Image (cartoon, rainbow, N blue to C red):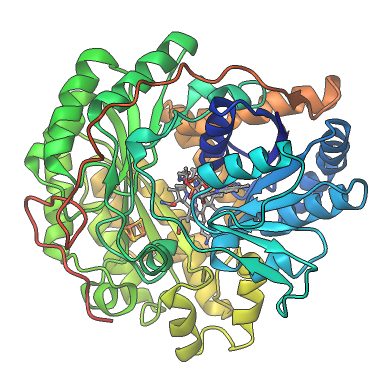
Length: 547
Ligand code: B12
Ligand code: SF4
């Protein structure tokens, strides 16, 4: 029985949860060292600017986390990594490797995008490309037999057996049937976050489209498809019933990219969910598969808030630069359906897109969002180029980043422009600041006030406010005003860790606990969608927009 120590930061990590469940099911032992990375968890704070950089240092648990990993005497140290967490992950790996000679394996989005980056350091021995459940079991099995098997599919190993590259690269495996996986091992996280305050789960993988800025664009090529896999409604309900028995669940978070994209699935699921689970949930969506029926089902089944990716209100730019095929009319129809059935929604919007660096676009988008009834929040992001996405090349073409920046991005420095994305122009930053603050406060204002502020051009006054601190206080206000369970969950994690760091010795170890009861695996295969889109989209034809 091999002992695998996972290290995660900031929040629940579903990749880790899934692999740990599979390892336990195969008879191996797993433990978790959780680094809260307060004020630098890349979820709410990035720790890149004052005062959060100072606070992040003050509350840092990194050294303690490394000590705990070493004390556990692991057979393997396993870390799940995205671009934003790569610098943290490599620092942990370095701290561990300088103390013990244990194999360190990285997996997740970033190592799959750029395996050479971690393997180019002395601190990482193995990288997993793509799905890690079976490869980790085979790796642990081989350790039990006394020698690491370097022929395991999906894994790349460092080698000293004379290969010119110094690496052994194994073929990528076919994608797994989601219905055959164990439920995520939430027990692993129980001690470090309030699992029941936001119970993460997913019912499907893949997406109906492939946006230029999203890692889905990389995965479409990597997997050779948009990956239309979905778990059966009964399996998801069974997992949630078991979770309900174990935790006092306040909110369920479906992390599917477009939760309702398969209408037949969603119809069956929504009915069973209401009957058997009946707990408020959040999920993510896209305007294309929305219609009145979906909005009604969301409302009836208890959707607390739908997170919608809108990104730009300029139809031409959306198609040309983001590869998003939806029309403005379809977006408006989506808002109308949600407003009609009283479903709250938040909209994700990206600043700093090409051809959008002017007030007209910011104003027009603000005007459109202001028309919405049920909009709860407009989350503004600044364009970030993630590795191996089409956006990197485009941003170079448009002169938004320099060609040499691509190398920095592939080295895991994509957040070197975190605060304002890749925008450097001072005047533009001021404008973005004003509109970012307006977008955030707008849902709390009566409709008349929204339009008054826009018409009288009062938004510009907001440019004189400090962005991070102002947004922080607006969010705090909205958290209480809306009794927002998502923000309350983040606050809960912070309170738990303030207490633990100040009075209780900081980082702890979570050793093998039984995971959720194993779900019976049905004989039916994963539900399949249409070949073209990967999903059944009843009301609209989805095609990839021309670049
Ligand atoms: C769920 C989710 C979250 C959740 C949970 C995060 C988590 N790490 O689990 C929350 C809401 C907290 C979140 C936050 C953020 N997220 Co997020 N998130 C996702 C989402 C929708 C699904 C990921 C997931 O859990 N899938 C299910 C699991 C089972 O699959 P998986 O992660 O791919 O893991 C498999 C393999 O990768 C591999 N694997 C993973 N880890 C490991 C480790 C080892 C050792 C091995 C061997 C294998 C392995 O095996 C796993 C099982 O098959 C993805 C988009 C997507 N569809 O992938 C974005 C995504 C991962 N997020 C992203 C981003 C940018 C963020 C944020 C920075 C955004 C923000 N500022 O709010 C933060 C970062 C927070 C943090 N500290 O991690 C980006 C990352 C881009 C990139 N190239 O790095 C993605 C890809 C979306 C995108 N825009 O393209 N996110
Ligand atoms: S709709 Fe969302 S998940 Fe799908 S490709 Fe676009 S950004 Fe990514």
